[in-house]
Amino acid sequence: MKEKKNKKKDICRAVINTSAAPKAIGPYSQGIELKKLVFFSGQIAIDPATGELSGDDFASQTRRVLKNIDALLASKGLTAANVVKTTIFITDMSKFAEVNAEYGAYFSYEPPARSCVAVSALPMGALVEIEVIATL
Image (cartoon, rainbow, N blue to C red; front, top):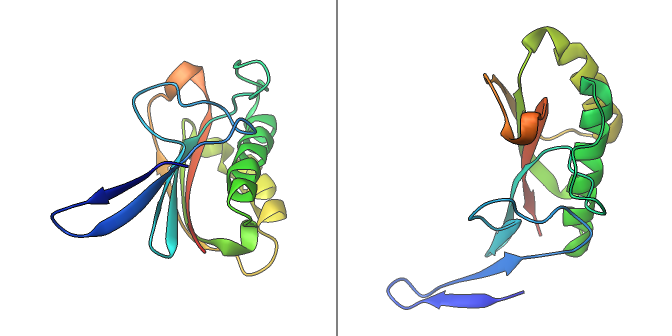
C-alpha cells in the first residue's frame, strides 16, 4: 500500500492493491483509503486468476463480483458488515431481481445504503458492476 501526502491540504491517502481481486484494467486503483473510509472501484465479474470475464448470466456474474468485493474488503481486514454504500450498474433492469437475490444473500444483515443505475454497456461486455464504500 503506497501512501501519498497531499502537501496543500495535509491529507493522507493510501492506494489499495491486492492480487486476490482483479487487476485494474485502466488508469485507476482498486481502492483508495482516506481517513476512516475506503472507496473501492467498481468490480465486474473478472476472475482474478485468469483475467477473463466469468459467468454468462446476471446471477453468476453478480456472485463473481461479490467474491471480488470480498477479496478487496479482506485485503483491509474488512467484511460486508463494513460496507456503508454500494452502487450497482446493470445493463438490463429487467434482470434486477436476479442481481438483487445474490446481493441480498451477500448483504443479509443490515445491508448498506444502495443505488442502482441502468447503463447501456460495461467494460468487457459485463452485465453487472458494483462499487462499494466501506468504513474502517
